[in-house]
Length: 55
Image 1 (cartoon, rainbow, N blue to C red):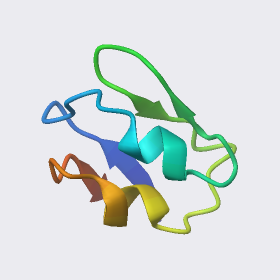
Image 2 (cartoon, rainbow, N blue to C red):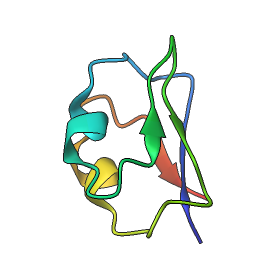
Image 3 (cartoon, helix red, strand yellow):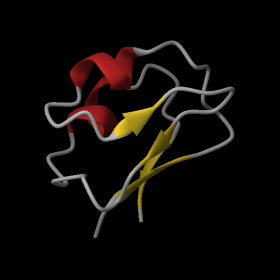
Image 4 (spheres, rainbow, N blue to C red):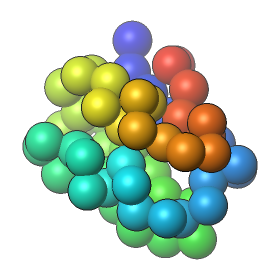
């Protein structure tokens, strides 16, 4: 199980700053590289928009 960033993403950077393995890429809507993600949940817990969901 991993995490995905939905269209509700505000591109605020909170998830990016909190990711310990730098698995998140910037863009209009951020994205998570599943090959790097360690499924720690830091992005999920820190997202102020609730835009990150468990896959």
